[in-house]
Length: 279
Image (cartoon, rainbow, N blue to C red):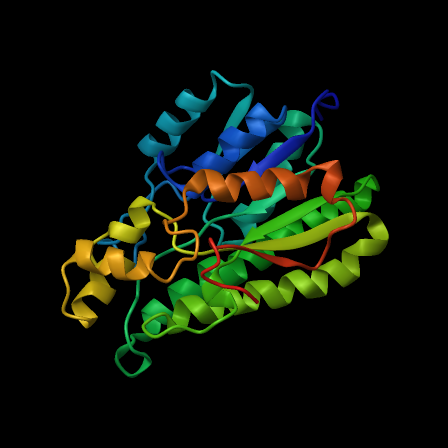
C-alpha cells in the first residue's frame, strides 16, 4: 500500500463530464486541498447506446484539465457493477494510502416519461445507477472508513425530485427517494464510527444533462407545447432567487459538508434549489 497521503482524499463518482456537477465538485475539493479521484463509466450504456454517457476520452480530458490544481486520479467504473465498485475503492486506497470522503454523484437523465409508457429498461437504468450505485459505492467506502477508524464523510447528490415526486420523473424520483432513505439509515449506522452521511438535493441546475434530446427541458417543453426558452422562463418564475442553479452551487455545499464545520451534521438532505424546494 502507498504511504498515507499527506492531504485528505476524496472520491467523486460521475465526474467525467467536463461541464457537469461532478467536475465542479472535483475542482472545488482540489481547491480545498484534497487529492481527488474521479470516476465515470467511460463508455456508452450497452442497453441504451443513444444516451450520451461519458466516454473514456472525456474522462481523460477532465483529468488533464483538473491536474493543474492538484493530484487527480482517474478510475473507470460502472457503479452498477459490484466488482468494479469494490475494485475502484481498493484502487483509490492503494494509490493514495487513504480515502476520507465519498461523493456519490453518478447519475442519468434518461427514461423520462409517464409511468404508463415507461419501459422496464428505463426504470431499471435509473434505479441501478442512482439507487443501487449509491448503495454499492457507499458500502465499499464505508467498510474502509470503519476499518480505518478515523471517521469520514459520505455525501450523495440526490435531488429535489427525491423529496417531491414529479410528473415524467417517476423512475428518477424513485431512485432519488431511495438514496435519501439510504442516507438516513447509514447516518444511524455509521455515526458511532465518526462517519457523517448526508445528501444534497439540487434543484434545476444548468448543465448539459438538462438540455439533452430527451432531457428535462426537451420533455417538459414538449409536454406544455412551449419552446425551450419559453419553458425556461416559466421554470425560473418558480425559483424565488430568480435563476437556475450552477454546478458551483452544489460544489459549495459539498465543500461545507466535507469540512470540519459540518462535523455535527448527519442524516440530512440539504436543499440547494434557490427556494424551489423548501422542505
